[in-house]
Length: 446
Image (cartoon, rainbow, N blue to C red; front, side, top):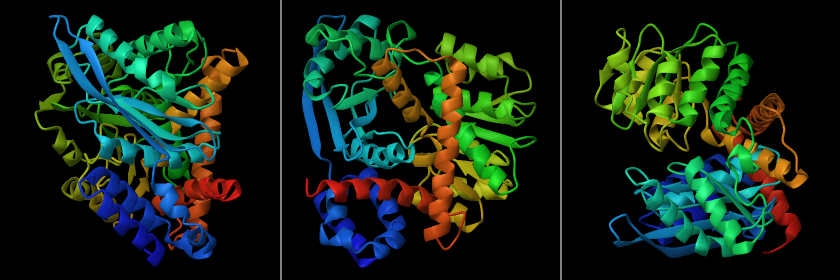
């Protein structure tokens, strides 16, 4: 890390000593940017990094709502509007008890680079609440969402900030949020993405992150004379990203042998039967352990952490941040893994990432590999603005082009700036950063 980046990181640590997730993301990014910073001394002259790592705006507010017993509950709500140099803020709303500013700032910082890599005019932002929709009735979720939007509506807009879904924020929550926005403002516009198809949503949005991950991996594997066809794949998670990564990997000829949720994981040496997983997770909203009760060849294990001890060729972590640690990385290498693709946001620890890359494992960072979701959200924004609705195949074709473009930008930056042409972590960080940095330079000190 060069002196400029090091000073900026030390300043962040001093000002945000308890924000571990944010500091982890910032450390990885700043370390990767060293070759670019050395070629652009003008960035230091205008304190560009100091401005880049600080959000333009953080909005925090209380969210009071009434539960089914008539008791008033209060949660915290946030929106981190991080960087608008290349477009309106764009990023999801996470509803989960773990939500705090550290997590939202890490997600927002990653989102800036991810959105930049898509080539679409969208800036970076993130938001959410420590509200947990699990176990809540539809009426309770509606009460929370309406209260949340009653404050948030002042800060968002189709050309200002366009939130989307994230963990805990699915079609139900987006619908309630959108209904309240429309009720308050009287405007029918694409202020949220991930909407239902009946009121402006986009086909292929549900599948986009998982499909996009596999499109990126397909390009990366091909560039290194590898392929999905015939490969054994392990996927953590069993939400939208994991399910549709599994679906696309299977279509490419891979055999997926393990999936998980927060309670544990399943291993099916004959290959995961995706229709069974979809029935359990999408229809019944059950636990992954049910799969082992229905498929005789499968086994269930309580600790999802050990999914990475399953021998595989390709690993796709699609659950949550820091799920793949150094111990897991060692197990993957011992199990013959030659490629890892991040479907979740920062699912691999810094130590694990360094170990995997040091062992020659092809590593696709989330800010590049999982950008398909936000790319398709931006395509939804386009359809809303044009008052059009594209077919599934039209959206999917555009997604494939975008993910191919992201890989090409990542690979080109790695070749130009990294000692190793397959250092896609450095490539993604530099390619995403430089576009935003050049826009910030053009717009002056703001």
